[in-house]
Amino acid sequence: MVHLNSELLAGHALGQDDALDAEQRDHLTGCAQCRAELDEYLRVVTLSQETEAPTTPVPAMDRIWRSIQAEVSTPPSVEREQPVQTLSADSVPLRVEAEDAANIGSGEKPITDRRRKWWAVVAAAAALGLVVGAGATVIINRNRVEVAASVPLSALPGHTGHGTAELLQGRDDPELRVSVEAPLPQDRYREVWLINSDGKRMYSLGVLPPSGSGTYPLPALLGNGLEGFTIVDVSIEPYDGNPEHSRDSQVRGSLPE
Amino acid sequence: MTEGDPADTEMKRPRVDWRNATDADLAAGFADGDDACLEESFQRWGSLIYSIAYRALDSSSEAEDVTQQVFVGAWQARANYQESKGSLPGWLLGIARHRIADRQRARGRDLRLVRAVTSEANVQVKQEPLATLIDRLVLADEIQRLPDPRGVILRMAFWEGQSYSQIAEQLELPLGTVKSHSRRALRQLRARLEEVTSWST
Image (cartoon, rainbow over all chains, first blue to last red; front, side):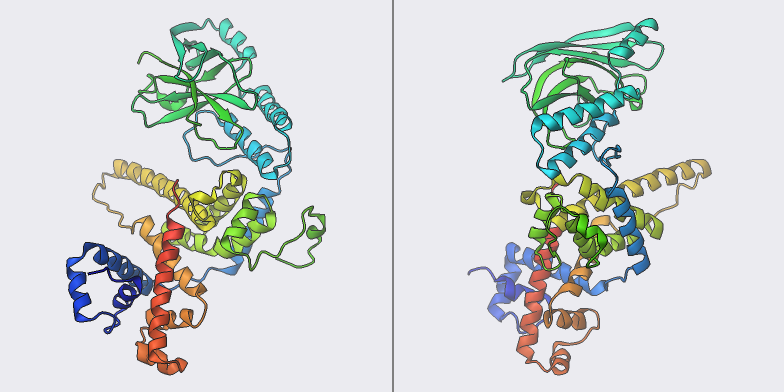
């Protein structure tokens, strides 16, 4: 027998006695597929009967709308905090992406223009001490940094190039120095990630500057060891405003645990 | 939105009245950065999201915070919106679910700390799963939006507990018509529920 149509099942779920005849009721007893669809309708009926639409206080909605307006009308020159759902060790690239996303949203600006603005934000962040770059390395050297581990980064299939990742242990928190020599398409940037050996969790350490090398403080969350976050991964990222890993990894290496 | 608002004249793009736009058109305008679409989206789904947050967190101030964060967050990340992944309300509800769950987790941590200190290991917090709460409020919201006579029939049947013949009598409609309207309304509800809760994050 053919399956019961949705109209019949909906009627049955609504308690309309005449919705199904004897033969159809028989079919329903033996047919898992129709039974499953009926169950969905029954669930909708039960949930609907239990819940009347709540009334939302109008003053609250007005207040919320005013605060939304206040937030979204922030002048573009001011850095916005971007709420992010992915784990991130360093807020800089994410803020940058918020800025970038806004540009994409407006859709008019050529890539080069976006890119300049984008790096301007990085530069500003660096000036504020948020990015550990060349200047910071000098300070680290003064603090007699030890290279605790140095591992090669090798190109993944479909990519060329190589690099190194060095675990630095100084007076302060551990840091990771990454340098990569590999071609980079003009409309892309590179990002450095720490991936857990469980293959499920990762941190973004931050953007790799166009020079190909950067130093990144390791997430405080890691505690004393790397807690399994041993894979250093450098990805090629499009300027799409998406904070997630592009799944296009260029080079990769493994730190000793 | 207020007509003739002085801010309107400063807008570069032509002002579109989004009130009668379909969800899909509104989503496209939203992703394109038209801030009138942000306002219309808030009009359509702001109170639903507030209600969900309020029931889940049992705090009006936290519910206000969450609602604000959902819309501001969605607006800032609008370039990530993909129509192929789901509807705009589905996306907003997905963000809301994460925000609420974050707060619930944070409370769970607080609670565990309290328990660790007071050794009240037996304290149980019984709460409906967030997904069910969302389904429940999405349905209630949708029933209110159903066009009449479908809407009024379903409200009388579900919320006032009236029989089909009582409804038919009151609305002066044939019994068969009332029944078929309610069947169609139920199918619509199920489809809508699937549409707004199936955003793949």
